[in-house]
Length: 52
Image (spheres, rainbow, N blue to C red):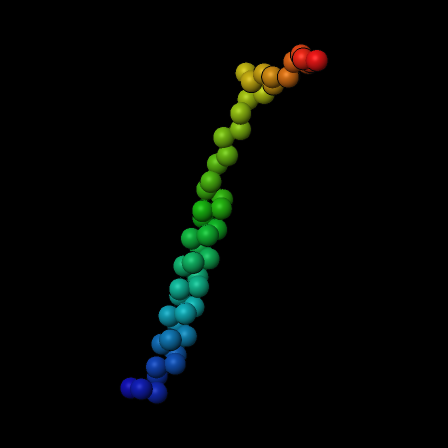
């Protein structure tokens, strides 16, 4: 039935959009940052050795 083709395209577009949105939301909220612990790392301060 060619009369129903626009509805099928609309359903496909909505399904694709929802899957894409769901995939992006899951990737955004499932990603975990690994924060470096501040107690273990020491910030190296540059030495001020002037060579005149």
